[in-house]
Image (cartoon, rainbow, N blue to C red):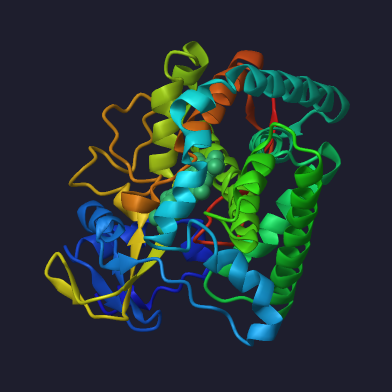
Length: 399
Ligand code: HEM
């Protein structure tokens, strides 16, 4: 076990395929202490799930220092739904929960299908021009960015800024970053906050039907939402609303392309198996691999004690390969059912956008296979060099 615990989350080989090491970690049968990371790791399904659900393990945001440099970045996190705990978390989540429930999200289906069809036409043009297109840049990425931007009311001309800003910010969720990456994250946070502040001011003068208008109304009433909380919530929704969806689609797509049997299944019946395929995409190669919690009092998880102030990380990608829960966990099976993966988390922070992510993916995946039944990789897909947010930079395909 000592040797296995030497693994380094920034190591290129580990990032390429972390699953063999995860399997060894799970064989310990309980959470293990990682000296260098100075925290517990919960690689098994039951333990990771217990970590996410424990009331005494919270998402406690550690402000970055020096404070004057990181001020905006810090409140963008401390005042967001994701990085707060009850009672603040309950209040903030309740304000946006209705907009993201299944019923509201289902009403977006026609618009989502329209965007998917427009993107496919564009992919066809690229194919004619270059002989290939990029499943990430031309398909998986623009869809969730447009959908979440339209929901909040971000103007089309500002939408292209969202992805680079978000990318700069989420680099800070990895282990180990350079001074340049830190500066880029701070700048992106400031620019992002400025855009939303501007939108809020405009919507207060000229209300429309978007989510920013709705939240600005709540903030103006002075009761439930501060201006920082409003901005932080919008930035979180815009970031969380696309990052994992892009990577979840790309990871599952590449895994499918590497298994002819699964390709055939999707080719033959893309609509009928879209639901199970999407769940399997999120299980097989989770786009979000690790979430930390901090103990607010001594907490027992499967025989170990996380002492007050200590951290423990739920390893979602590992939990989703747990051999005690899933048969043949290292096999992609797009018809797997049941599939109790925890790719969307669990407990009070369970993904608010799960119905939206599911609708986007179950709409776009069959449409891609219907349009291009002979789709295949045109080059080796290029992975991002990051572990926590796991995904591909580009996936060139041809037909
Ligand atoms: C395949 C796509 C997605 C995956 C795999 C995913 C996964 C997750 C996970 C694992 C968490 C919990 C984090 C934790 O426990 O610390 C989470 C939280 C969250 N997600 Fe997602 N997500 C996806 C898409 C979306 C979308 C489309 C939205 C758009 C609204 C969204 C909004 C959020 C928000 C607001 C939270 C914070 C919830 C809270 O703290 O109460 N996510 N997501």
